[in-house]
Image (cartoon, rainbow, N blue to C red; front, top):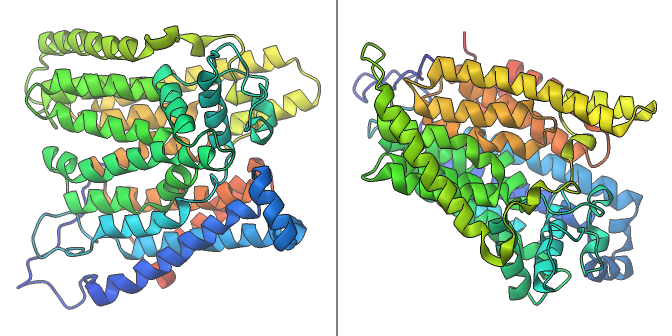
Length: 496
């Protein structure tokens, strides 16, 4: 990330061969293409995956083909085509520079409004590419019944139990208390309706997405990055739209709160306010904890420290102590109601590492289990290898960026934890991925993000049909082809 994107020449000297500016005539067709893509992806919810008895029964009576083999193939192809359309539209709408001139490309493109349009098809449909929303609803229903989700398994008889992924039915909740309280509130709001309660879990994701859109510009300006580029990068990224909003994952709310905490860190009293918000983020999902050091360093050192100046160790230590105390107090305060506290550490909590996912480590795990290796031994070995890799990544990221570039440090920690953990799901990369927009990425890094996004879009859809061990390499091949020849389709300039 050491070489920022070259700035666009002033209007008076810009050559005729400069990249074209996406005026209204340019961005409107791509906006409509992206919307069509979102509709095609949303249709997958009714042909593939998890569907509650009511709508499933209606479809079986009036459109039976949608639930048979033909319908499942059509749904997958529809979602794959839609994902590719969203990707192409996202890339075509990108600003082609990150400079701050009023003449720079991308000016006038209403990225936030386009994002709203592209998410609309996802709002009323069941969660896409996941059954997690049913688990959320089941956990909220347990609280609604006065039961402890850290004691009673998610498969406890409820309107949602049969739609939960079978591996998780005998396990207890793994989310911190604030997530459970929000799930409880949404179950109450919908009257525990078997269709609308799981769909309502998307409100948490939409709230997180709204926070991202709101704070992307101010956060970018506070760290000297391009606000327009950051809004495009976050608002229209198809992986974020499909996995966070479409998948209704509570990770979206966590990431939205992390971005707010980072922005607050650059304001007056930012150490305290930023760590309060970060404590709330961690109470939604635990990986937010890894953004804590970055929030403190951003508040103490600013966006970028001159490496020639001495490192203010005293201020950093005091900041870590104060920020850690504030964040921990916030986390404990929202964990206290109903005495839930740290129940998510229970022995019966689910272990994502034992379900095949996008991590090559999990592929080896499944192979070991298939030949009869004990689950406890396999899980321990997998966790150990993952821990070593993650710690090594943390050390490298800390040494390279912690004391000079807090935003890169924060993005690196979250990406390292998401990508080197014992389990990798497509949305885990989004824990730190959106923060790349605020790190002055080079043109090559932006293209790499595009290639990774394309890989996970393809593999995320196809894993409904084939093992991740097969679909991830397929996605990689498609991304490599795009990297090499994508200019003909998506307008990607070849970089040397």
